[in-house]
Image 1 (cartoon, rainbow, N blue to C red):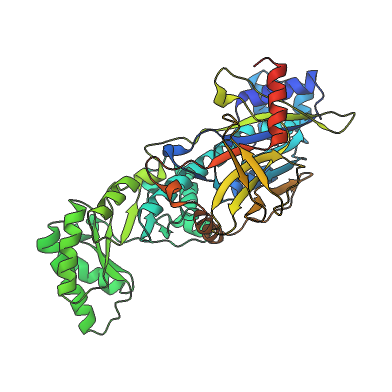
Image 2 (cartoon, helix red, strand yellow):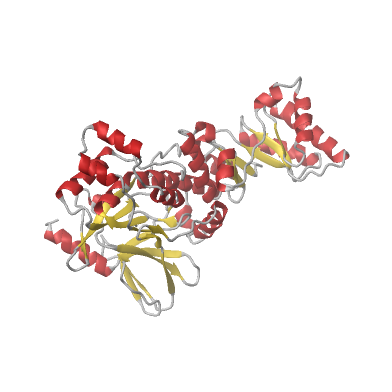
Length: 484
């Protein structure tokens, strides 16, 4: 992405609004936009944010080259003075964001852009495109990994992804959320993550017989010998031939460091249990039994409940496409405009007859509140950026809609962490993105801060996202002003 100029990866109305600001308004008016989402995908109890590194690459490379200007001229909507302005365009503002791999919840800003209005407006589409996609796939992968209960999950959906970018950055997001490897070799190269794989049915079919195919593969890859056993007959042919090859390797003194079988069809619970009996009786008790075939978190959970002897899962289509929930639903809304005379931000609010579409105004950040004894999340508190908290004092939090629902936290019973960190200051990047595998480790720790009830695949506990009292008052003053 860093090698591509994605400046025109935007909706046309962003550019027409930019020209409108240029012509009719104070183009350098500083504003705040928040990127957030309204509902967890899959009716989940949380989401995993991802994509920040690609947002950074996009912002760093934001410029209109000559071909861009020529194309915009050809559209017939833009005047020469505006096109001339675009020749020297670059991002000069500030960006704050929640680091990748963090557990997040609805309505809290994942990214906050503070910049001249023309700059802040232009980046909306690409920012949402990147964050929405990777956060969606990371959340889906987190559900799959949780369902696997500690077994390894490999992402191998590249051939079913909606294009190369979806396959590459979907694999990245899946690794962040806990997958142990990907079949996507380019993703492995780009992000320095493990690549894994076995062989296809065509490998078996290209040889005179299954046993010869297995022997050849074992000779070539003795330290990564996972044999696909369902090409002809899993229990009568595939597993017995795999056992024969493993026995030959053992007699030849070849260390069986990573070996086993893969099931890709049939009743995976039954076949895995029968295969496990056969492998154990032959003395291969530590053999991997891997499964694939249109898996998702629901099927994996069901197979685990049925006692399937599977300890490695290959998940493709349903993960890389987030098949049952294909969009994340992130939005980007104006939250404040700076008063040039005072330098203070004037809060702005979007109203709607649909209550969930009413925005939270002002310059905000998020404080995460943890139970001090357990380290688990109590609630998230969206608050104004200049608010200060002292955990040695009691803290009253309340539901922003059903305000009679309150919790009073005793002094020193809780800890707090501000989630948003500076990414760009005055147009310069001040944040170093961690490596993907380091983000993965951080994400694993983040998942550990969730209560088990919040990770249920169905009807999970909803973590409270509250508003601080100053922010709640600000919002309600604006609602009263507009008679809502």
